[in-house]
Amino acid sequence: MTVADVLLTAIGAVVVGSALLVVTTRHIVHAGLWLVVTLTGVAALYLVLTAELVAWVQILLYLGAVVVLLLFAVMLTRAPIGARDDLDRPRWPGVLVGLGTAGSLAALLANAYRWDKIELPAAGTAERIGEHLFRSWVLPFELVGLLLLAALIGAIALSRSGDE
Image (cartoon, rainbow, N blue to C red; front, side, top):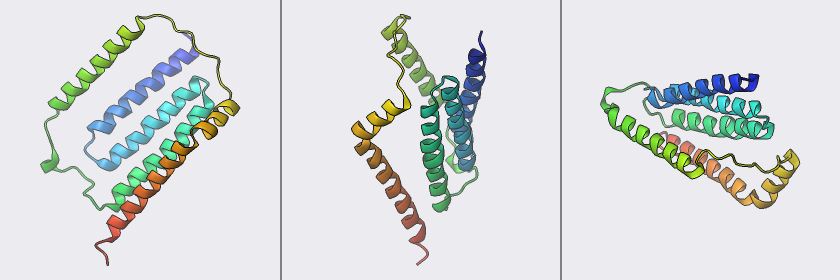
């Protein structure tokens, strides 16, 4: 086992554990903070795999934008932040659906690749990835930015409607 294997296993365990805490915690702000841990762990996995550009995009887009927007929207809506007994639901249906989905995806991947080794294409440089991103994918990139801006403006409008 190499150092990379040990790091991938350890960071992967942290990511899976924090992801489970995201969906099982009763406090919405705690779920958002566990999401930060999960997404940071995914960025660390990319760093171990020597995909530095993808790791920085993960940090900038997901940690810098999506999670901050999510926490900002939660705080603006003035929704109850703590655990509430009237919102609790049985967990076993969710556990069954999650296990069924995980089993189906595992069976699909095992059947699709049949444990064959797949040759990967040549690694791209940051210059090639950036050129492809900003030539071919610039419109979807800008549309996501507009969608996030609209969500932020909508959250502000909803939070201020009762004040005036």
